[in-house]
Length: 201
Image 1 (spheres, rainbow, N blue to C red):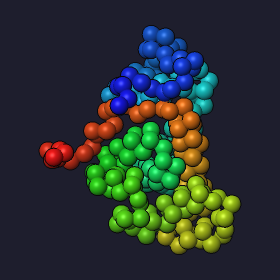
Image 2 (image 1 turned 45 degrees about the horizontal axis):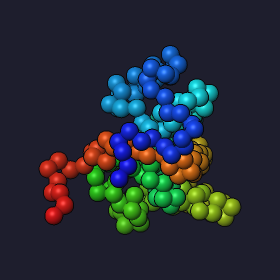
Image 3 (image 1 turned 120 degrees about the vertical axis):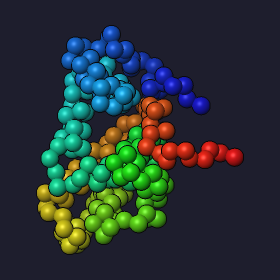
Image 4 (image 1 turned 180 degrees about the vertical axis):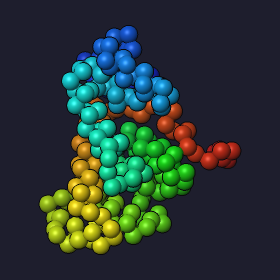
């Protein structure tokens, strides 16, 4: 079982402490603790190099938190479904928790992690995640009919761009996380689950 303080498996890529990071990165960590109660391990992993951290966070924040025709929940759903295809442990744990929190539905979070096809999704959601899966598994097979299927359920061409961009970002992020054995913060496992849930046994 992984130790709570393990971040990744690369021994020669240092994971800095709060005291070791730059002033700007330290302020960013403090903001994470204020808003989330923790510094996500993915940010700790990138914090050995400010330029790499800034590049990663700028893209992430724009795609996941910036202005979009996609809701925050829809973007997290894409993150989870892509991560499920890629079997990315870190992103499934972290973004599965985000889906549970944003939807208020722990079961939906679990279904998207395990097999999104068993979830009762709206036609809009189904078309969106189907497209994200195709981006992940066989993007070269995407044709105009795939984009038309998204338009048919109300997505604009700008929305299609955002679906593709979020899916593409998490395909990159999944591969990086798996390659370095990036471990999720333990807090994600218990987040946004049913209160008073019955434990094993």
